[in-house]
Image (cartoon, rainbow, N blue to C red):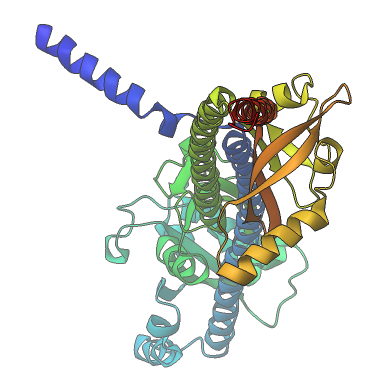
Length: 458
């Protein structure tokens, strides 16, 4: 338990140390929010469009399947009518002749689901009333039209194999009798053409050709009743698209339901858009976050440099204020940009009152032209910029004039000439010099007087 707490504490310290990297910024948050919003909206819209396209494709495929089934059933009707007409013309043909006729049709190649095509003269005698073929034979006999039976039992005809097997009947009448009424048809009946069709084989072939991804369920009747389902055993999912069609042929009604799975894989355009949008949103967020981190670091460096600069300026100001001599810094126009306390004390002005004042106001005769002349003469003679010393007369705030000794140096700043001056008030020195000279003159006069008094001629 202690070890776990220690690891947790270390992990917390690492997270705290790297929080400046993980800390979100407003621009990155807005970028990821807008990017995800646009991406999800576009993805949802494309999903709806893909769903509509899938449903339209399912409807078209269902129509093709229904049309193909109907066309195939119509082909069976043509085959039955052709066989009936041939049989009606040659009633006395034997089985060998009939086999040659059916073999010539090549039904096994063109219609593989048609497993039998026979002529039955005594269909009613061989069928029982409960057999679905009996009802189809009765309907065909009385209507004179092709009739389809209900699905036969799996073991009704072992030779036909297992599967969805139905029987097609077409009556063959004598051509010399009237066929206006049901009684006339029954009297003229000579037999029936019988065809056995494997509908499961037919549906499998059509599905592979028309819509391989479809799942078809076939029901006997007009309703999709699970109890009457005759084809298709797979259960459909609620996410699958569905289309329903009614089939009617030979007096039989069928309900066909076609299912198509909605595409949920990453092959669709919507998923590509989603991935692209997410990648762009994440990349933009990381870029903005990186820029924010760089900006934060730059701000930190700037604040640190500003503190260092302020500290340097404070230290320099303290040194200048502690200097016994006055210091003035002038710009290219000869105006004061900074002054220490000694300079303010020398000129007798309050703190900050020298800023912006031209030097010639406090030191008459030293304007910009005079400064350039002094500096140019030194450069032309010596070839460098040493400290220039000169004497001048200063003017205090009260109007009094006093002697000054100044040191001048010119320097370049941003391509312009600036000046730095050191000032020293020599009033006391001048006064002491005058007093010393007066004392020397008085002493010389006394000496001269004594010399005259002690001379022998006096």
